[in-house]
Length: 260
Image 1: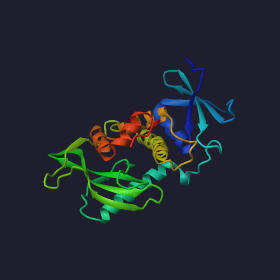
Image 2: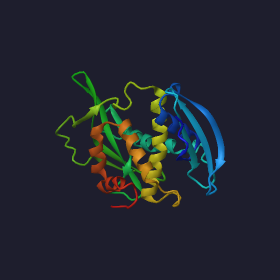
Image 3: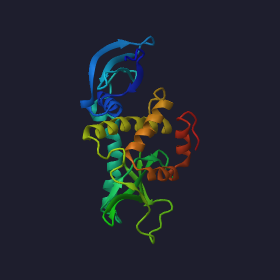
Image 4: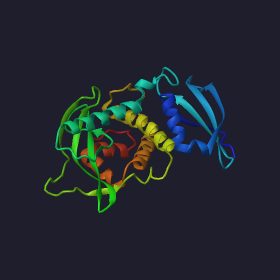
């Protein structure tokens, strides 16, 4: 069965397009590309029409359209959003290592806008450890605040509600997350690439630091949250909400109406 009307998907780079294909259709061994054709939409935007054939024999048509006015894949690989998200999280983990107390199992989780510092993101620093031979992720005892534009650390402190006298912190889930356990490296990488691009556009829209007309679409917010849930453990959701309840409410509204 062939879907005639293509689903339009915004992408900012060839890297993000690849990530979307993997995240949506799974490991590359499970599907093939029947055809690719560069066309134009009635509004003048470039559109790459891709027909994907699944193992079932069904085909799905996807139309990739540019996020920016420059056209498809205007964003070079070295400035792509997934790399930017990695830089924010990498800066947080490097600072934590250099500034004790730092647990050796500390892992940076996904940034959300800081409530304390304007134009900055709060990166929760969860802890990966074993308890009686059972590996798991534990609630973040620390949070590192990183400037969103300059990627410089602006602050560090205990996570809200963390009690250093009560160690270890609460176990928030199995590790690796259920959404990545037992799947191919290619699928995990695809999810990370697409999520990284979407999440940076979400943050751009919140801070209004990107090109205003780019914005974020409700279905992109929904996809970003779905990917975050696959790449993270369920128990981290409450940590994200605690760091910025207004941002969590804004996400629940599809990014359409900002509520601080």
